[in-house]
Length: 277
Image (cartoon, rainbow, N blue to C red; front, side, top):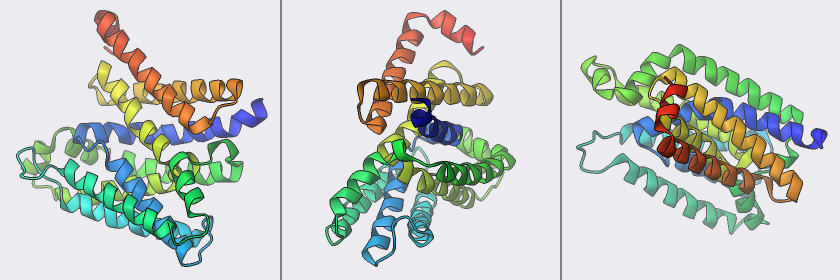
């Protein structure tokens, strides 16, 4: 059992380590579905790569996915709007997601076994992840994590206090592009492993759980990491015990964790505040 569950569990820990933190930015910026849109852009790039005859597990296919993700990052940085903007950015994000999804379906229709490719994009292949894949993922995440740490004050200020960034004369669209580009790279490497649905869960649910209890950036990160760890462990354990699909079950575990956290916050507000004080 341990030999079977250890690689996917370690992969989940690696993914949660950065996704949970990036999710805090997603919630603060109120661009909840940006990860789905970027993930779908990456998936569209990978599908186009298969269409032109590139092996879907090759470096070339990864380059295609990164190029399409970069296009998405550019769109989202250029369309950032204030709260009083005429068109909410979430609308732009939704449009990009829908168009990328439709395009991926059209491309997959011209690809042998295209239906299987779309299914794999949605649910990933977590149970069969290998140690070399995990090592590559950890290396990429470490590089992105270092960049995020070095630039954390800029990114956190723009996400949590955008008015200060504007008053400081920062080039917010440039910083947004860099943030979404790094964000897109993270998603591009995680989607083939866990799929679009689980990528969304790793990014959003731990952050929402954290925001239920605190607003301190450090505590938010710690609570989000713990939420990702617990949901991964419970989902994998139940999946193995009852022989159920791993990815969808971890998504459900995230949902159950969120409901539990909400109940704790509602029923024991005093204790909840004490935990994160």
